[in-house]
Image 1 (cartoon, one colour):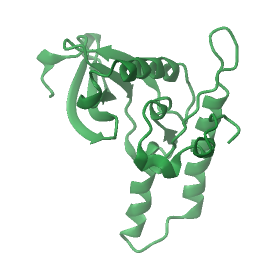
Image 2: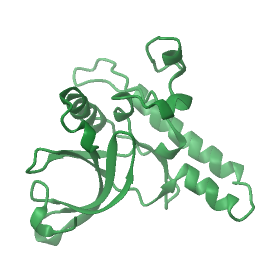
Image 3: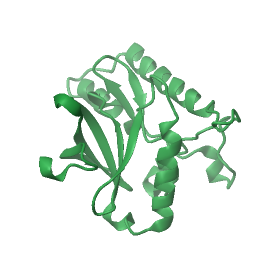
Image 4: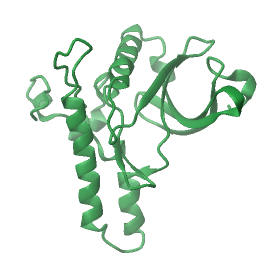
Length: 199
């Protein structure tokens, strides 16, 4: 990764793999524009075992379309959906300089200190504001079309260096539930009911 000759759609450069989940691989990238313009971005790509699953890929594209309609300061912004020469999709998102909420809490634990409650509360309020914006989404025709997370976990709350809490993975979490995320699943799902914005 990192070779300019292999830019995705002529503008996205993969720099380094920074993480992976049960469904996607996450990379740091650079978006290149005219006159030397650059911008750091994050790219999510389906894991290899899902790349031939047509149902999953259709859901991945649909989730990207929905997520791209969400604009709110506490949500990680989806910028683009790119496709490389091999036909592999890459979800392009804003790069959040900072750390996850669990990493933030661990940074205090390593020093033998408790995480200050005002900071934790602020992160929680930020995440809830992001969820509220997703729940209040309306489609292009003005009809209510709430976007539900369904499996919100602490590591999906990012804390930027400017102090803003940003919620990620909206839409993607619902594509293929992971057994490891049952502790964070919407409670309705445990009793075979549809998830809704109310719970």
